Image (cartoon, rainbow, N blue to C red; front, side, top):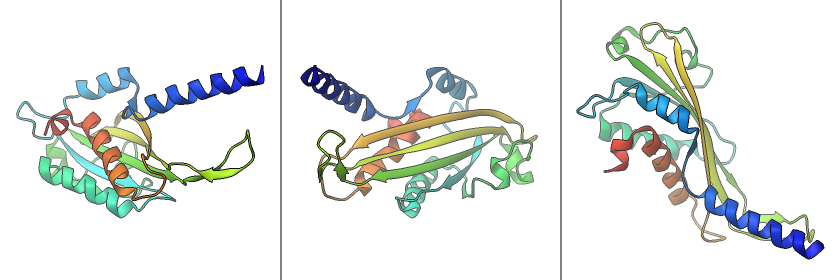
Length: 191
């Protein structure tokens, strides 16, 4: 019976690891609702201003903010960094007067994380090296820019395991940001 549990646990872990690295996890209905807002015009120009709040205990948010900034620059999107407690994240808070020319305000609270590569397994109680896990949880808030009414709040998360036990995390973190942005902006994904 003990061997059977170990085999089942190993198979479940392998399946879950395959799913975990598949990309952002977004509820399909929420994803459809988000895209139904038509956040981009027919010419792919944005119909929103963008606020980013990055918070993390384990990842340098400066890098994450730079990667979001590259996307915003490429897509001609006004991006402002904010704190998740600031006005742009609050329901009923209208956008700045000059931002109300666009119908929406998107506010994203992006929380990247990294789990260390050293673990203690519950089965053997011994430590060992393992590849680090890297991921994020985020919430996309869509507000009407004129009234500040919250139209949608969409939770998103993803996780991947590094291919090496030791090495640089930034390429994985950058891939996570790109995956998130591709789910938000499908045109960007095709570039």
